[in-house]
Length: 95
Image 1: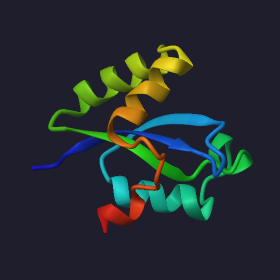
Image 2: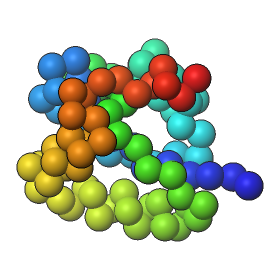
Image 3: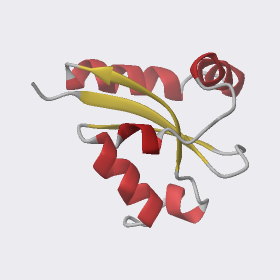
């Protein structure tokens, strides 16, 4: 079974949030960390994985991504803090 992931990244000082969706979380986070693709995350050094959700259906993951992108910043921060109160980088726990 192939899983999909909705994830939230931040920068080193936790001031910028980025929400994305992927079917390969480890590879995608590596791409963010290595700045493989130019854009928002590479420009603002957003590469710390602080939150993710797992889905069996990519359509559901995309719906959730869109929902989270419409949330107020405070709601997103509260969501992260429920599972990761110190905003630790979760990337290493995936390996």
